[in-house]
Image (cartoon, rainbow, N blue to C red; front, side, top):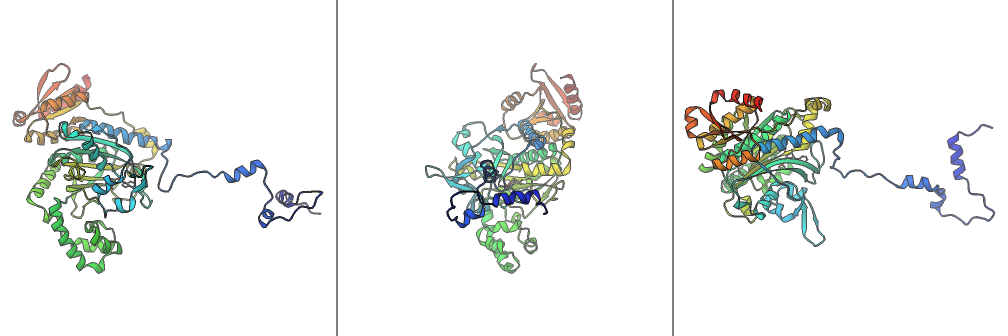
Amino acid sequence: MQSMPPKKKAAAKKAAPKKTTKKAPAKSAASKKKAPAKKGEEKKRTVKAFDTLRGMKDILPKDEVYWLKSRRVAEDISGAYGYGYIQTPVLENAKLFVRSIGKGTDVVDKEMYVFEDRDGTKVAMRPEATAAVARAYIGNGMRTKPQPVKTWYYGPMFRHDRPQAGRYRQFNQFGCEVIGERDPVIDAELIVVSYNYLRDLGIEPIVHVNSIGSPEDRQQYIVELVGYLRSKRTYLCDVCKKRMNKNPLRTLDCKEEGCQEVIEDAPQIIEWLSADSKDFFMKVLEYLDELHIPYVLQSTLVRGLDYYTDTVFELYTEDGEQGSQSALGGGGRYDMLVEQLGGQEDTPGAGFSIGIERVINTLKHKESAEQATDQETTPKRAAFFFAQLGVQARRRALRLIEELRRSGIFVGASLSKGSLKNQLELANKMGATHTIILGQKEVQDGTVIVRDMDSGIQEIIDHKKLEKHLVKLMKED
Ligand code: AMP
């Protein structure tokens, strides 16, 4: 007789009824199917391993280099530009986001994680941080502090989006917010900080910029836009047909080919700006020119959230896997937000946020993890602080700081208005060894004052010789 293969033998053994002297009672169909397994075996079959929820990821030690670096560079650059760290809770009252981001936006209507807390309050897992920072500004009486209040954050956000490459349900953002002052130099500084953050990480950013004016400018423009879109309705995708009535500005960044053709000839928002908004935007662009920050004027850029006014911008790169398809970050001005959230009237603000997962995906695409480890640089600490007084000095300071940064000399600054005393205090807080001071007189003379923060000794240095002088001081330190 042919012997059975071992597996079959075992199966035959299991299937065979147990030997018994009494006649066994009739078994149900279910129990007939499987013989009871041994104790240990049963456990193995029933304990199922958990997976992360859809759209959520573990951050693992293999990616530590990227994550720690993305945080450290955020810390360095925020400190250098005079931003203070803020951390708001992950859970907030859901109304905070409905009132700020707005009904009719994808984030509020479709993507927010909302649930009832045990006491019946509707809470939301923050989909972004700007509204929460504005809430913190109001609730913590930051209006009484020297204005503007400049903060930065780094942490997780939650959006119940359809997961795909570069789009997750939990993701991290680094962001900066400046609340309490309306000045084009702030918008320019935010663009510079976000641009330099990506550059310091090794990514070459492309800045897209536009202005969406005041709510009144926008109202008039929307009437014009809807009229135009109605006349082209048949060429629009189904989503845009709905958007046209609900949130017409969103049609402007639809990626569908038919919609893109329609949008190409759409009226441009810039033509509907008031003189004040136009003038403000021109000044932002002048600052960017002054700083040699390359930008693309993108007339269809509107950003998706209700609270934006005037300047809006986004950062892209060609370095990533998806080319320049999806933005690494974005931001803009939100002059009405604080008031909308119950804060004092006339409290303007502006900010940006950058998606860390997309940054890291870009870095990974660009270089292997091994190269990234090799390229790890020691953290740069600001040894110098640039203080400026007066409009002309501020402009010149912007340029000088950028020139120094490009030569590898890290200079901290607070470019919005502020007394020399405040600026020197900030320089001290940052641990600057020297402060470079530029006033009206120095602008005219083409010089700066370099002040030793320990001894108080001051030297007058020509603009052209400043870089060399600072290099010398770094060597001495
Ligand atoms: P937003 O304010 O929506 O433009 O978001 C700012 C940045 O956060 C984007 O440019 C992305 O880099 C990042 N971001 C937004 N939503 C997601 C998401 N669902 N998954 C990953 N990153 C995101």
